[in-house]
Length: 155
Image (cartoon, rainbow, N blue to C red; front, side, top):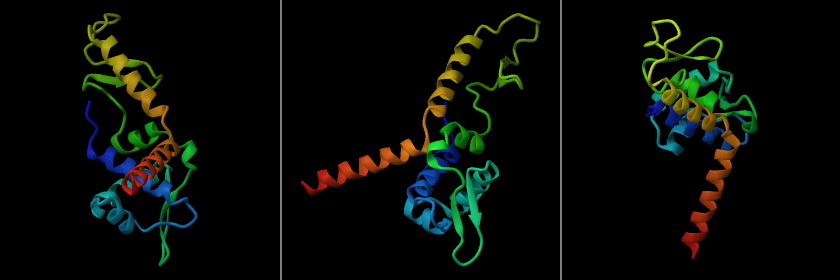
């Protein structure tokens, strides 16, 4: 399963916002420059993240964006679903309102689709990985990685 650039750029945007600490809003243009991402695309993504309640915005000369929730409380599943929609490993795969996995191939009552078990496991694995990863972990990982690279570069 491939996620689109919405997920990639959106997660990078969230890490960049989290790196700022949240005291002051950050201009989207400066984040686009620092992350070398297209500003117009980030504007589209940040609107979705704002709708999901993950970022907040402030207007004015000193306006910009900041995290609406502490990074420890933001799960990557929330971010990816805000940007990509529900996670489905196959087109025929849908999650019902009650959380049960449904397959569009199951049209004869209780008869199970032959591949449902596989795609249910794939969905579960992806969902668990995203749910089990917080924004704070990604920020910490990036910070550690940068420190290691700077130490290696100084040696």
